[in-house]
Length: 174
Image (tube, helix red, strand yellow):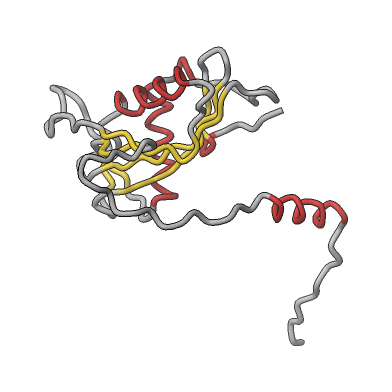
């Protein structure tokens, strides 16, 4: 007997979800101009590299991720491991104090080279500063062994208590 794929009728819930997702689109941004001498990208934060040598007794993890999306899992687990007391346990409440989307560049040794806010919570500058500090303090990150270096993006979900979840490892939201 020959296999024939069948199409199931779309339910109203699926159609509603599709319409909602379609409305979330945005127009693409124009390509970024090449940086000029003396001009700083306001969304980018230069990060001074840490010493190339790890501290005495420190073990640097290695990531076998082959793409930025897979590396994001390793990076999120690394940040959670270093900030266990600050991670929100369970589902987050419906209203969050801040949500930010941060792009992180990690070099071949696990050092943070650049932070770039894709969506900064500008109403909460203290959250921006705290997230940047947490990311810098988390270095060295797992070494992206298969990629050499990596630029990954994650969304920070921030509660007014100062506890957070990363979208990559979120337990959901009420």
